[in-house]
Image (cartoon, rainbow, N blue to C red; front, side, top):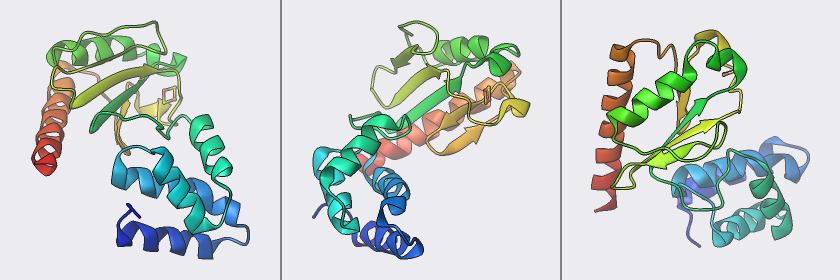
Length: 175
Ligand code: FES
């Protein structure tokens, strides 16, 4: 058993909400990811066992759903939406400026652009996933939080300051 009692209890509560156990799988995996940062094979198996589903159901969903991670990710994961509505108001530029402020080298093509800080505490991604916040673009997700209206250099400075605070907190938690 590796999940905390709090997370296990929260998953049990999810299962009780739905007539079909399988419906509880996605929210339960999100709860497990929130605690662990990503979903290892062991964590997927633990969640499936808690719900009472075959492990294969958890693996299938985790590998299909883009917001669940089956490989380790940095403690601070930033995902810029580069879909057309965001791109039209400068999302590419905001991503590039954020990378520069963090001294991150970006690799890859539009939609898969990514990079990380030298200490691996912050990951930057450009995605073509619409997060439903097009009316407040440019925007990015930081974990579960949305950072919106990233239009000016001041907005980006504030974002980067917040990312550094989160990274420092993650570092101190790890020690
Ligand atoms: S297109 Fe970027 S949030 Fe919708």
